[in-house]
Image 1 (cartoon, rainbow, N blue to C red):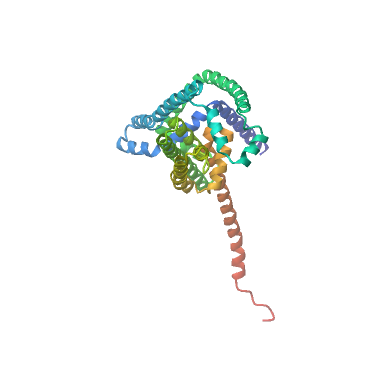
Image 2 (cartoon, rainbow, N blue to C red):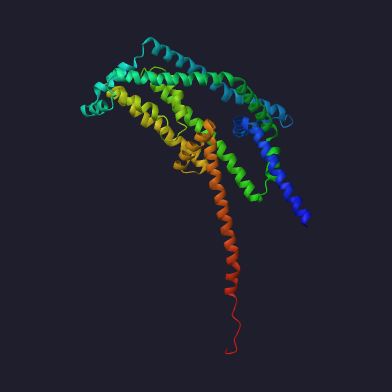
Length: 372
């Protein structure tokens, strides 16, 4: 018996060590693996329909699904990135040549402020153009150093990015083709009750699909609508600001407003009341309405998480994992809620089983006593 117990403990220790080592090997490609799994879950229904039409050709069905994924997801991202780089370079050129004069914009805002606000800015030394230029120049020097460092890092990591992208596509193909068998093996190896494994696997799939599909749909809608109104109002770089709004819209409730809100205030402060009112009304009634309607339908409804928990988990996930965190954060939050729900259900079931014998004992007829 002692030998059997020792063997069991040694085997568990070996299992933990080997698992930790395997996870350490995979960690450098965590982002590629995660997005490969996420895209496989997202495109699984499409792959299932293709597989139904070609049941004897699973490899071709997976390959066609992979090509459709590239066309639907990867190609638009490449085109948007190219437009973003072009507009960013154009804005930088206009700033360098003086066509965009930030000092003149700042002076217009200062002139439109009330007297009490100007006095408060005077105390902080924020009304003098020369002092502002000195502060901006120091910030620009620091920003240039950071940008140079990041540029060198991007150049050095280009090969790593290409390798991660290739791993993601390679993994996505095999997950589409052999995903069901792999999921079944993982489910069988997890030491949990069958009901718990089914519930957690279903929650994992639902949350990943809803978060990726819902957040990307909201981001695309808000970015497109924001870029459209910026273009109609003649604001420089509508594609650039649309992409920034799309990125910020990953933060529920407050995202895109961080861009169109200050621009609307600028219009109002500089006397362009019509543009300011139009942009503010459009931002609240159109861009904000997309977030208030689509996000609860596509994200909150499927994940069954309240809006405040989605916001906090998204911010925390992005703080820990970067851009990937907008999926990982709500996923961990949803699994946390699901695990505790299962735990409470088990406790309630145990209490009901313990209460049943006592209730049955109380319902039995009392034996007659000698006094009776």
